[in-house]
Length: 303
Image (cartoon, rainbow, N blue to C red; front, side, top):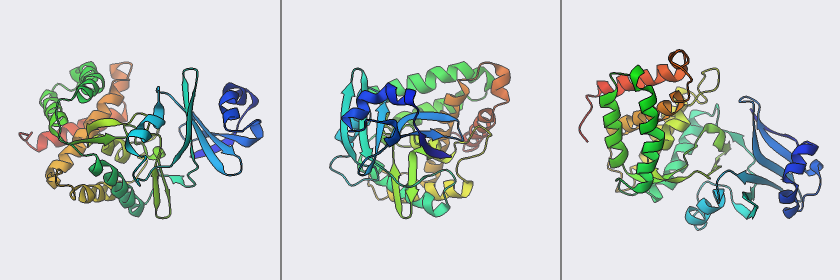
């Protein structure tokens, strides 16, 4: 699971200039965020000053700070507050309030409902009509079209499904998409929910975050959240989105859009396979096959 561990002298030296800007001058006041389940270390640091705060080094030019400035500064959404931001050389940093909760892996159906409600609160606010925007077109070509070409020989009956996915991608409503909404990036404590790590956020089709949260699994193939919790998350999200007059989508179409979201996710994952044997033995292959079968069973409705 996720935890903060004591930083090493070498790790401290790597970001000492950034820590000094936060009035931190020794490794005893810093812990680093690690995920013991995924065996992954992040550029996220817990600073133990007068109050606990979090320092994050961003991988993009402006990172979370640019997203916050554009979308979150004047709204009461379920995101932690940014306290400061700065750049050092080519690296950008944000200092944020510390979120004292557990990530959403293994969360209950009741917690799934709250997460769906809070996500829809953000996304319904920024909902717009779909279309071939430059941003959507670039995302589609890079993350879907090119990657599907790499695997389509193994899914020769999926060309029509891919055509449907493409049509839906450019006709569905668009909104602010987190674009990395893994359960690890959602924190829950009591009645509170926080979405963290927004540096890749952009305006894209509304459904893209859904499968990323509801149908992602660990290295052993076990889903991070249960089917029951995923169902509660999706139902509550849909009910909240229905309050927006521009979200005139039937429950049947919403379920199809969720399948399209899963299709996009599993195509992305499968494109990283090194060869056909690795692909066909992966859990992504089995999941993508089931998603293709589901979409085909709906009769590929006209959009």
